[in-house]
Amino acid sequence: MLRESHIPQNRWRLPALLFLAIFLGSGLSPLGSSFDSRWSVYIARSLWQRGDTNLDEYQAAMVRTNYYGGQCIDAAGHVRIGPPAECEGHWYDRYPVGGPVLESPLILAVLGGMHALHPLLRNFSSSNPVLEGFLRGDADAGHAIIELEVASVLVAATAVMLFLIARRYLSDTRAVWLTLLFAFATPAYSVASRGLWQHTPSILLLTITIYLLLRAEEHPALAAWAGFPVALSYTVRPTDALFCIVLTAYVAVRHRRYLTRFLLAAAPVAAVFLAYNFRVYHAPLSPYYRSPLGGFLPEHFPVMAEALAGNLISPARGLLIYTPVFLFAMVAMWRRDWKLPLAPWLAALVVLHWIAISAYTQTWWAGFCYGPRFFTDVTPIFALFLIPYLARWEKLGSGRRALFLACALISLAMHLRAGWSPAVFEWSLKPVSVGEHPERVWDWADPPFLR
Image 1 (cartoon, rainbow, N blue to C red):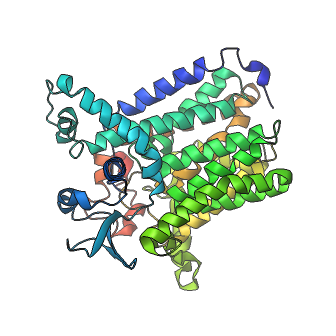
Image 2: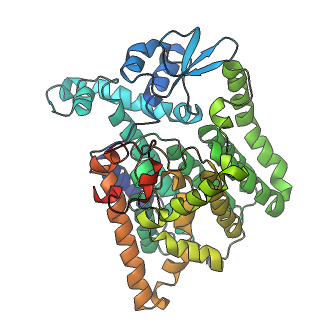
Image 3: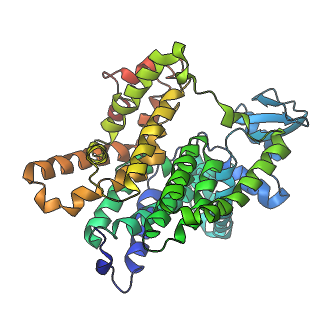
């Protein structure tokens, strides 16, 4: 299936154009979703100004949000979530620190650009308080726009990496179509590009890792370098432990000669991550990383069964409802249509991820969001398993081609709503909170995508 001969001499022109198109298409979409990522911009500022990741200097902003996502950690490493304001220690974001740290150079670049352009932007005004804050150069009021633009850069970079993989097995034209489908018709757009969720750097790191491991088929030494991005992925999202386990096992089986170098590439990330956790929490992992997967307990089996189904077919969170084109990818996984050494491992990773997100029975419906958020991390894998269909497009038959295109268009319509309609996010709170009434995820009379 490898098609290196299709790569033109000026091999970076098309990826650069794709990056620009996807960044603009995402970054100019008016709606962002700064929820769990609420403190990413603040952490970047704290790193630059004070050399730490605590949020002590942003008390006013924390009070305005009722300490949403905040945790007080005292000198002994004891953790208290949320208010009251008194804290005999320091305030931190309760979510993983890896993402904000990795994103901080881009966040600081946007902040610098915002302040540099302030003399021009201040002549404009908007009735939108977030946009008005951005135009005034107010990072507190405009943080959601900063997140949106940085997230759009990261998703555009992920899409380019996916294109570089796809063009190895497809013509450039078909690789472009697959890349655009990934960028706008999947959770890559509706979740990862709307704000700096944990999923945003997660999908970039996973795609880089897959790219290196696929290139390692011709250049085996590249397998060693894959240890670095896959280790970083765990610092941004706990469930990415599955990436580390499965892909390390793959290297051990397929590239055993380079396993030691793979582990050495991951070691600096692990060392810094552990050192930070011991410094802040007095433990190797933060409480967020120790969240229980209750679904594996017998008393929670019924809830886990519901979660397994809900993550696939519920009207509020079902992957196949919001991204029906991925049904083709699932069939390709089952039939082993993508005949590469790495493909069965990626398919196994998708199944394990589905089980893991469903085992988190406390909030398997992913809280306040739109669509199948918890599946975002493995979206690049689903997209890659569409390659066999595009590779033999003419042989599929008119009926299958029509069905594929219909599913792709439905997926596009579903996910684009997240960039343009606030109503789809309001569903999580109105008429009642989905957290208090999770049965709403099965309400076909009021699905989020029809709000």
